[in-house]
Amino acid sequence: MYEKILVAADGSDHSKRAAHEAVRMAKANPQAFVTLLYVIDYEKARTEILHGQSSDEVHLERRKHLVPLEEIFRSAGINFETKTLHGIPGPTIVKHANEVGYDVVLIGSRGLNSLQEMVLGSVSHKVAKRVQSPVIIVK
Image (tube, rainbow, N blue to C red):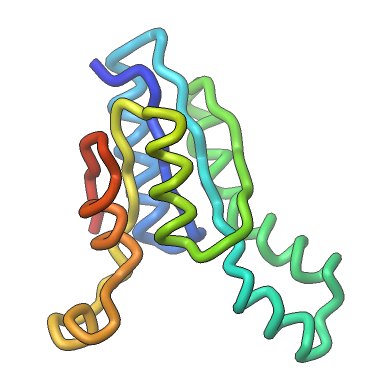
């Protein structure tokens, strides 16, 4: 039974499916606690601000992605917290997951094709390789 569950999310449909999977896991253990992690990519945030968005607008845009995910946990009666970190998503998720020692990490697949994944890599692939606990990539 998983007790400490991390859901690394970006607000995509894949991360919504990961949140639903985390709910199923958490319901199996009354002691389960879910951390919903959102990483703000420095480079993307800087670009958004340079292109005229205020930091408040950027923050509101990010919250817009998290609210539906939070509602998934809230409506299911799951104990959870939302944590926002700044950095490069892959390494930041890995560092946080390894420092805290989650029982399982769930992350949505970005849906890259084989060539894109080979050339670019993916956040989920990097997380799966480097996190010390089990990682579930949800499509």
